[in-house]
Length: 459
Image 1 (cartoon, rainbow, N blue to C red):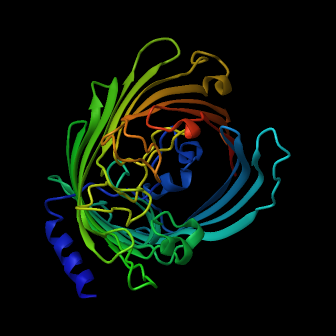
Image 2 (cartoon, helix red, strand yellow; image 1 turned 90 degrees about the vertical axis):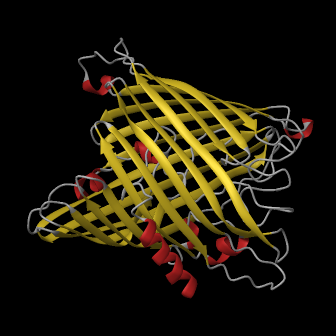
Image 3 (cartoon, rainbow, N blue to C red; image 1 turned 135 degrees about the horizontal axis):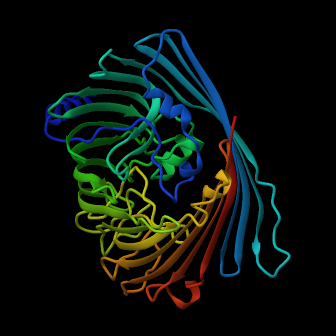
């Protein structure tokens, strides 16, 4: 408890120096399922409330996913239904609730060419996804939200997910300031995005996040700083092995628009804290960095093309065996960057941003941009190419992939089609291909194919 209080006081003090305004809604990108969700419920929260207002709605997202690697295949379906309610009994106070019911079924898991194994591995999860109160002053200078909500900071790399807690925002002509506190231990363990260790997965990740944000707007540009402290309450059964991962993140970023024809973002993150050596109680210092930046250029040409560029980097170790486990470091300081947010680096590989350089370039087109039929105008094609390069050739990536002492991880291609057939119906299909490079051994360098198709139906 003393440690929590000390960290909270520390963060409250430095909030005047570090921050980015935390967003209450989910982040969206062309590789995130959230991109295909009409988030009208979240948009409604930013509007000025009238007394005794009541809004409600729902949406359904059925999905089909198929992944093939060499001769192995796994296919599954997933249907997620969400219903939301936003009630404002008074002008400055509102209450928001959202429930989720998710059904997931794995129906094929086999070796291609064999009879294989058709399995019945279905499960259904019902959960209170969001539920919080919101208060804002008449002039919207001060806002506070408390309950179960989304917390996102900066580009969403460090933190981007649900938690139980609260956030305060102060908007001034000089700068915007935010402070947050979130606990993850009450989340459904099957829907908890903060799992690192086996203890997290079996018992639910019990972590506290507290931090502060400062952002300054000038013109169409925003400069921001943020600091996040993560405290791990994993209770290890074996006293000879510790898995706690306590991290502190300090970051700065710049985002904005360039002449109305381009937008950009750039974020640098420094991570410190403590972790433990593999299968021991030996404590290690964390000393890691990450960089995430991108540029989108809008061209005034037929089909309304958009060119996109992205570069991301996460530091790593020569001796670390995995970047999905908190205690995989075997020697010296822990230089592997680990985070609790989201990074979209391609469907085929789905890389963790650690011991890795990611270089991406792509485009999007609206082929029927000048059609007189609204439904045709809402068809979009997206394509991206990715190249992956290890930072330390002798290290690994993800959960132990690319073990050979070579920096060439491989190439990726992502293709997507999105069609807003109606205002309340969106259809989409994504395809990802990863071609392993020379860092993979000959018996583990099969191409990976990923397909995700589905719809988003708004009620």
